[in-house]
Amino acid sequence: MAKLDGKIAVITGGGSGIGLAVAERFAREGARTVLVGRRQQRLDEAATRIGHGAYGISADVADISQVRALFDQLARVDLLVTCAGGAIFGAVDELDPSAWQNLFKARFFGQLNACHYAVPKMPEGSVILLCSGIAGRIGFPNYSGGAGLCGGIDAMGRALAVELAPRGIRVNVLSPGLIEDTEIENNLTDEELARFYEAACAVIPLARPGQSTDIADAALFLATCEYATGLVIDIDGGWTAS
Image (cartoon, rainbow, N blue to C red):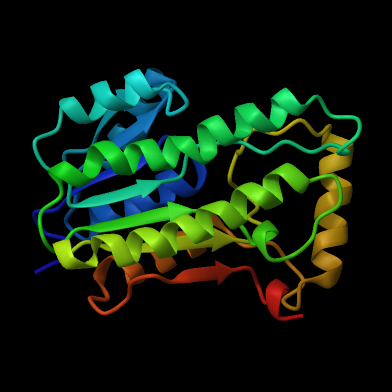
């Protein structure tokens, strides 16, 4: 018997990168995955690749009405993994503050709103996995808004773990470091992104970026370890330890 047989897993940002890797891993363990993202064609292609009854629902997590409509379609949610969102870089006195507000709308409130609508559909034994990032623990220049976002998600995950424990729902946070194949949207040029990767790899103890499958491995552990809740797990090649 596979570890997630009979489970319904809703994965936002499930059409690519980390979300897709988690969906594939969960599907191999028997879960039926519901992929959520803004591009229906990409979701359909991902669902075909995954198989195992996977299907996609188009929704923008930054739009609370679309998040509500998404969960209205589902009778039960056993696993919620929230991976959707982008990244915005810029000096605090130069970047338009609306950029940070939009980032929070998608990546912070998108995750919180998903929890709001998913929890009433979650039976005892269900699991929520939020996604933050190590910027909440390591100071990155030109990423103050993103750092605050990641720290906020970490705090939200711990609070939800305590709040939902009496209902038998576990909550943990995936905190990725430098992941090579995320396809996450950002405002850097190719040259700027290459410099960022080079600088990061110079300080990461393993001296390389990770892959989305590394995050999926951690997600499966958190989804199946029944005594794990309230954790923020850094998957970062040792970056936060250096």
